[in-house]
Length: 232
Image (cartoon, rainbow, N blue to C red; front, side, top):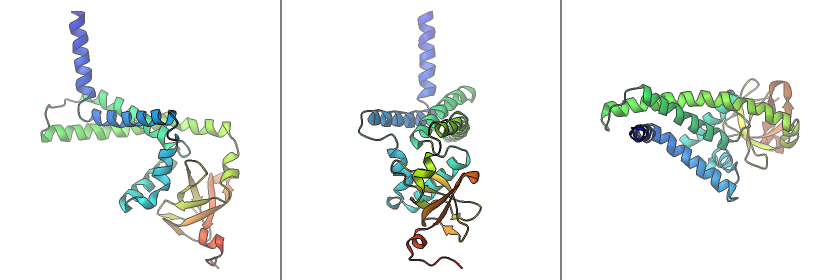
């Protein structure tokens, strides 16, 4: 009967949606939705998560600091720098949940929590995360252009002279990135240092916007303040 078929569909939906590994992405998505709700109520700013993750590194373990650095660099490399982390994570968890749900339909998933089920679910979860990540890049990457058109030329004026922190292993004349306080949630930007290499954790000052490279020329804050001699 129609009712029996609807019950069967609902039962199948709940089985896959609440099963491993889909429920993990569902829980993460639920957390992000709660975050948005709290932000809409005015108890948090939308970019508070960006600020805590990217600019409160002194309170994190050394391993977590490296993970955050890798995340910031990855977002810049795939073209998502400048988009709030809250938006990125929400879309990522949603698309990963959808990918996991579909994959659980296609891949035979043994019941129970034996080793085979855990290994299969872990593989499906990893595949769903990778698919969700690439889908997120495809969905959100065009937004950077939209933001640039809405507020052209504002970022260089606002960031000039700001203090930042090197997040990559090194900043030199050809590579590197870091985080910069902009008075809000903060930004991840490409950085270049032509006079000397700057190691991870070095405080820097943004002194020139190199538009053609979409990067900022930086010097160490110690050199900027005059407490460190410039290289000869």
